Image 1 (spheres, rainbow, N blue to C red):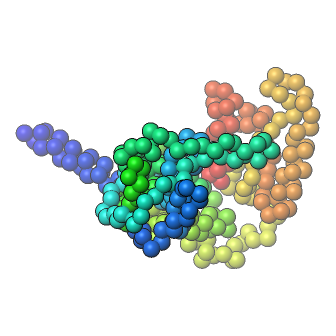
Image 2 (image 1 turned 90 degrees about the vertical axis):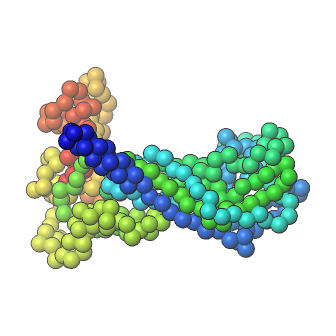
Image 3 (image 1 turned 180 degrees about the vertical axis):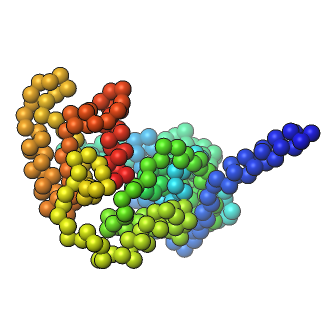
Length: 320
């Protein structure tokens, strides 16, 4: 009996953990902000702080506004699914014959593509468009941080009757999973670039107040840097990077991996020397840079092949 109870408790705990791994965000839109404009026989509908549906895969479909946003995720998290719940909507007055999405224009000096007519399978149907309000979502990483970029259409269009509905209030739910295995943590004290990245992320996402809770270690190191900024004992020290990644050497922000020969041993020129000139210029411009050869990595790092050895080197270089 005890074993069954323990197993049931484990299932409950696991279910709670899975349920907790989601973030919700509400959006509201007003019909007063919808801006319809006539373009010949078509209507172009726009909404502030949105773009338009576009891309070759959407050519011929109704060109509706698309809302984009970036949502900060917890450390090690990756979005697994994004869904939308419609809390309220409102039909807009009038009939709308929406302009069809056109093929992209490329600056290759070719003639512009021919006009794409409305897709009859959509425009001659009473099936609501879009079928899925979520256009796309993608998890990205920037230095210490993970975020998901989500795009959705806040409209429902009935093509045959030309009715257009605005989703006045919606809830976006982002489900995510967390993987902290083999996570690389920076060992060297944080600095100006880390503070800049922190501020950039806060300005880019729609949930900036979560950054300290999601990334407590990063936040603590940045606060420590702010408290001691300008009083470092090493401030003004000459740039002296170690041969291999090490705390004893200066911090390196830009690493160039090269060799003077191909993997077959054939000489291809003085790549190391030329890249060192570039590294010197980067360092003088304010971005400490260093050149390291493939041979040096091969001799210093374990691995079944050179690719694995370089990967291990990059992990150490990133930590330091």
